[in-house]
View 1: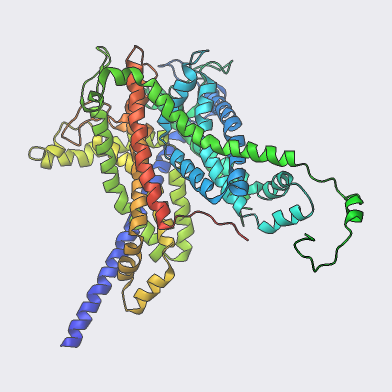
View 2: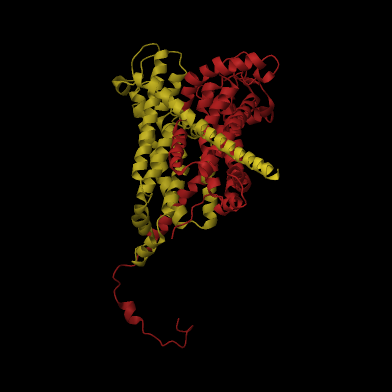
Length: 285
Length: 332
């Protein structure tokens, strides 16, 4: 009697455990499901709209069919270059400080600030770039303002990853170089940074992939442009902006173009990810 | 040296001093310069925080003087009469984020538990990669999918059913059904914050010492009992931090929400009715805003959003850091 009762209790506990395992599997499936759904539709809708014109022509006026997003693709690359000019030097050198020079307490504070900055909503960066650049003479929406907004966002991202990979460089490298009488800054640049180069490049690429899809900071800085940008003081088109504008447009042709743009943007982001994975196969340093 | 150790024989060092060193002594200026250069770059973080705070505070001055505290409690949003109150946006941001948390927290913690406690090893890495890929989808693309796939599906199926079944008696599901609305906004935010809560929770669970688990197994606990008693209760604080971090992201989520929430500055009782969030009003109206008070009012909305997300992130970081965090240590 008692044995069967115990057995019952035990099998109830085992059942409960199995049930929870099942629920957790269901959770995992539900978490990944949106990815699959988005992909299926991206491929379905995007493939039919991507063609040669998409990469070589600029958008047609609303209502007319045809045209492409060549200016937006070039615009996105221009903005990424501008952002890199701000983000990469500040991020990498700041990361060097955190890893090579900073004291424990200073580092704690700086890391804390970096983590806080990573949590600032991207739209707020747009407002800040607007207030700091767009309304200051020479007034106006410009590629510079958009690039700056994206560049600011890159700084904490790159600083954190750079610090992390530099910390993986064995201390023996530093000691050996210093023992040879090489000054510390040369040791840092030529030995430490160089041996962690792969990891740093990885961090930079991940940051670029992440900001390449950002729309919110560009809405009122780069603004968008349906023609080619001839001057960086003028508004410039960007792929995510164009996707947004076409997605909420009533014209079916523009909606197709939005899907095509989305497919291109996601494909580029994933190619970067795959490249990074190939680069870091084995170890980061 | 010699005075400190009088018993040591005195060594004549003059010869060594005169000998030419093999390499010229490294200049200290290069070191100093480089050190200050990197320190300056690192301090950019603090400058950036200051820049955000100052620009938002300064830019919203006119609106703050004009409306004072009423800005947060008034539900007027009238650009024509230049009368602004942010309450509908604050309401929309809070409600949509709350819906997102209700959906995302159980799913992501369940996934994290599966990943650390249950999944066979060969499944873990691919699943983690998939979650990273979900995190890599830009917000605007999720919004595109939301407009053309998710909203029509929800409108014709689940929302219609909710309205038919509960609409008359439960205010939360009262019609009419537009498809876009608060609930759609919450769902899309949930998708956006799933990856971050999952990956941070996973880090937290992984940092639970294995001794905890072994101890519980040794007492004859089943897998679920081990997870509950030894893992989850140990990691409570850290998991809470992960959830708060997700809340911080949810509050600031912009593009995808803007595309599916309906963008109507109203405080509606029904979850199926259109709403508006702080971030989406910025996204929709900022570029076209003009007038003495319109732009400052929008910047003040940015200030509110910044203040709230900073506070939430601060709490999250403190919780995560006090749990042990994942601060890397120098490899030797």
